[in-house]
Length: 361
Length: 97
Image (tube, rainbow over all chains, first blue to last red; front, side, top):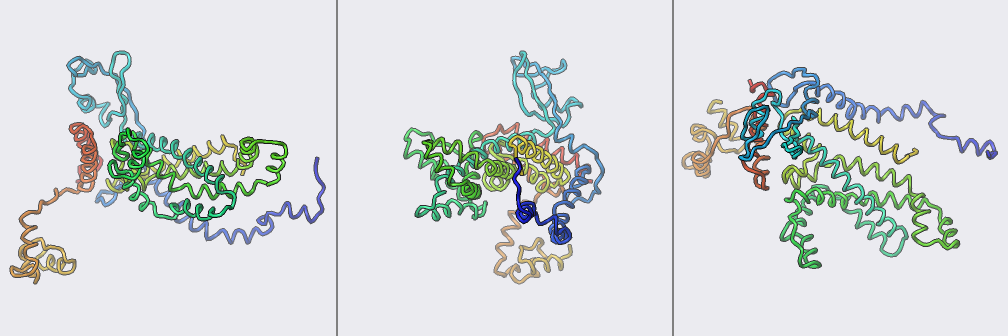
């Protein structure tokens, strides 16, 4: 059923501002487009071009066109199965080798590959080889980080927002407290947390020990099982303030009368949360999840300051890998290739996520 | 570089001079200068870094390898890996010719 509106109301409803002042809108867009073109679009195009060459920083050699070689090196995977003898020697193609590395160096079709993973299957030692195992490891680490940090950060932000939505006495002080780490420099946060995560003297291990005396101190940043989790917790803690504020704003957009009607109908607090707050917050939560995911993919500072990709490559992320290769090892073309692949990956994930979550706007 | 150039460079930057003759031209580093001991110390103890254009790469890969070993990796496997990475880099740079 359509509702009849007066001409004045109809105008207000359909007014978008842009349609009527197209020329003014274009003029106002110019500076932003100019800056975007110079600082985003142009570097992107240049790095696409560079990724097809072997350009390097500070090299007297001129760059050569190498086609897709950089992409091949990043993504090549191979699988070999090797018979392992009891004296630990390995049989591959009828020849005996002492180490896997000898197999890789003495067979020309395997040259340049190194071991990504090994497992036993069918009574043979199976090796998954990659030309750049560290890149693949970094991609997996980054995904692992995203899977850890997004639920922690969004869940924590939702809890904080629900706790602080009413303006009780001291709510502002609490909001400021939770927002303070966002304003602080990430490097400072990382240095403080490095001290807090120290195995013997760190605040976190001391606090757990005082509650639970049998606890074996975890060396958070030097234990390959825990380092990424520790970084995820710190990142969630650092970024939670922004998400909290966005969710509080979303909560204020939910009409009060819905809660009044629900409580008159006798709905419990949980039912009110489940059937009013969550549906009312849907768009906000989708936006928060999307933006947290994109931020989480750009993990770099924490790794660079706290672990330098260590222990056993457990915290090496794609951006850390790109900087390490592109700048510290001066293979700028290779670094550019990593970034372009990564850009396409994030773009696809964001679009998929948007589709899955039915983001309307 | 000529002696005068080294002396000029060190006079401006304040770094320790890299040759005896240049040191003798600078008041602080002359045999009776106040910083002579510093010059003698570095002359006797400094180890030069390898003279190769691959130095930044080797340094980066080697420091990564040392860090991995310090955090418990197998020493031989880690050093093998570092060797492979450095060899690959030299190959990529056409032998730094």
